[in-house]
Image (cartoon, rainbow, N blue to C red):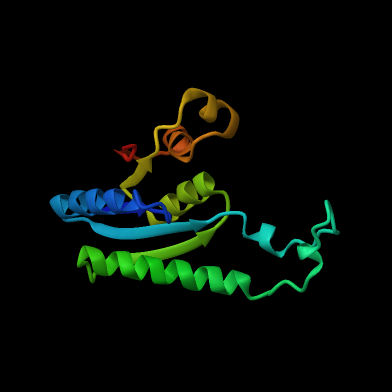
Length: 151
C-alpha cells in the first residue's frame, strides 16, 4: 500500500482516527492525505421567508461563507498535520455528500486504503439516517481501515 487516505471531521474522536491512520501509514511507508468534507454548504446560503416568527433567513447572507468554511477546514487540517508531526502529509478539503465525496476522492487520488472513524450508531440510526462509514465500506473498491471511536 502506497497511499493512505485519512478522513476526519471536527468531532474530537478524529484525533484517534488521525493518529491511528498516520501510524498505519508510517508502518506501510505510505503517502498520506488528510481529507475533510464540508457537507451541505448550500444550506447556509439559502434564502427562506420568515416562518414561526423567525426572519433570520431574510437577512443578508454573507456570500463568502463558502470561502470562510474552506479556510477554517484548511486551518483545521494544517493543525492536525502539525499535531502528527508530519510535514509530508497532503491535505484536501472538498464539498458534497460525505460518503460520495470520500469515494470519489479516494478513486481520484488512487488511494490504496481509506481510514475512517466509526461512531457505532445503533441499528435504527443506520436504517433511518445512514452511516458514512457503512456507505463507504459498501461502495469502495479499496480496503477500509475502520477505527472505533465510541467511548
